[in-house]
Length: 580
Image 1 (cartoon, rainbow, N blue to C red):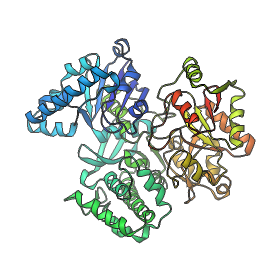
Image 2 (image 1 turned 90 degrees about the vertical axis):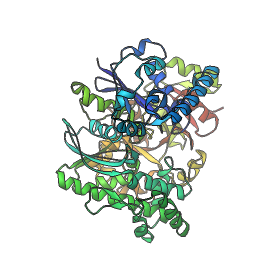
Image 3 (image 1 turned 135 degrees about the vertical axis):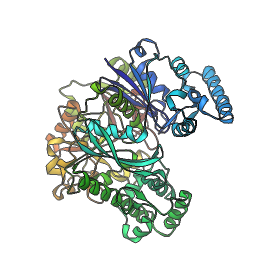
Image 4 (image 1 turned 45 degrees about the vertical axis):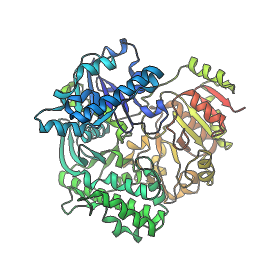
């Protein structure tokens, strides 16, 4: 058995365990700490995945870090004297605080691995030579197994290729930056990933869109989805040409460029000046089109150049589901796949996949992804204990009656919190930590968003029975695989728009999760029961959280949402829970 641990530190920290090429578990640190986009070393995720005792950690065969940030204490020899003394001081303070206050206070001073690599390169050394492995093993109670370091965009690319199910494909990764790059296009084959084109950090698509997010009054690396939502309400033509100065495709079609590469600090003031003269809707619309057009044209050219008509995508830029739709709708593209943890949370598993391909190719067996239920589950004893402590009324349902009971509540207009099985990985709720509602109420966008403390213009998405994909959406088959994970929008067919207004955005698109019974029978049966009652093959599905909180993980968090009246009723595994 080849069991490998993947670690991503920094923004949206995560940890992954992969056994013989199959994911055993992946956890985002934010779900456990309850801090959105948790930055740091994933202590809580490692404890949950591996346990705190020695036993579960002894069977590891390898460990892989993603190239992002790493704890500085393991690279003291690569730091200058002043930086080393500073980090020793900060780490000592954090160690003492954790010893006094408990494990929840554990923190690490991080350093960018890219900086470490740059310093070491000047000294003729490599990362592996500077890594203090003995301290790492001792502090983390880990066996003395090989430790590897995977490149940032390579790790993103491996997640897209490995889980796409494509034998040969074009792989495109794009984000803010990693290892000095903001985009790389690759030829993906069973024997390797070959870089074809790349863009430096100074022309980053992710930082361009992030700067727009900031000048519109939102938070970078958190609220970019709000810009995408607002874009549907605006007219891009009013400042599209002005926006292209901040991001566009270079003349040769292989890399992206802008007018501010010599000093990227000038870009944000330029965008702020535009935002001061135009509505936020028009700014968002222009930014969205200025992002889409160059990336779509680059993909079109790369498909033509390579003949690879299947496209796999990863990196935070491809959290933009409207962009993904544009790529999918290219006539030259046969099929797309977007890795569901496309942001940096996916780097932990990407680091493992990179190591598997390079070090243990026999364990590297790509396959089409069916689900991402890779988080913790809670047994009946834990559920009952939480229920008793809550003081809420509850009743246990049989497996046979459960789908019909939930469907009837939705038909009655109730907002239902659904908590079942292993928590999903990635930014989307996929029926295990979801809030469900009827898709028929056009006004729900206003009142449910207020109830969840969210922006009123943000659209809701549906979970739908997979066999209705063709009848619901245009171009369904080109994204059918990735639509399992809410990673692409579709244009809704005209005959359905007025029947399901709660999940259709102003531009007649929606971002569905297509549910297959073979992959999630308990969720599918609820959707089927709702279809039997109403003739509608889908329900509204939004993430089980309020604004600025991560998706819930534990039963206690679901019960708190019921107590705070975010939902009307809670389905907690087999229990139906009503608010007192």
